[in-house]
Length: 307
Image (cartoon, rainbow, N blue to C red; front, side):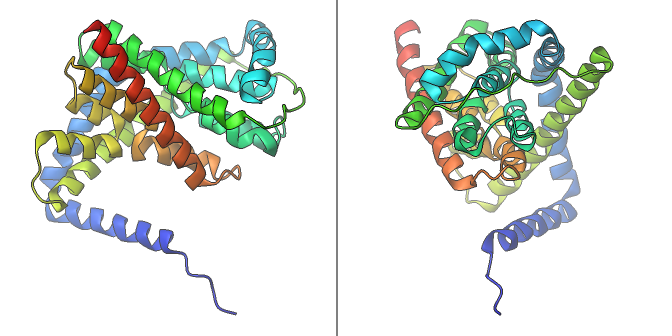
């Protein structure tokens, strides 16, 4: 019996070998790119995101969070055709940012707390960035204007929610599910430990994909700075936002698109969880692309009115 040819693993292995070759040929150049990515993470992302990761993780362990989950259940069911537990996961994703939403969806599917009928819709709804990245890291850290980060965050959520709303039309509302279980043990330590691991993984991803972006740019023919910024943003959203860190409507729209789409770096993190939960990558990528384009358009129109 002939084995079915699968091109993606072969392409992935080839890309890894190319990256290894570039690092071997010019370790100083690409080591500096890794260092630049770590510096970007340490200066812009770490101080704005880490405290919020810890606080939101700790908050989910309080009974109040379960009550909030029950409160959002009717709205989540009507608008997005997800259960109360799914609505809770979406709230957690919107508070904490990537890749918390994808990990929460994976945990819920694995534990049987949500059904397969809502898993794809929930994955598209719950995979959002958090306010502290756009307001703190991008708005304050890169642009020097937190209000513009808030504008991008609002457009980001509207883009995600609008496409998710359309996606849910014609679908049945899932049956009510139990609220997220409260974890026992030392809540303070577990929240701190989980937050540290998460922020280190984010930093590692930014550093690696910052270097990968430099490799791609070295392979491609010379291009203008804005095109280099697009390449970087499609690979890793933080470096893309840094490349477009000017307070113009077009720059804000491009950054909003990067953050909503996620870039390869975020998408790899998310799909590592979601594919294990049975969610197909291509439809998910298509939805994230639509959400990114809509969020970018909304941000551009809004920025035209206020800048």
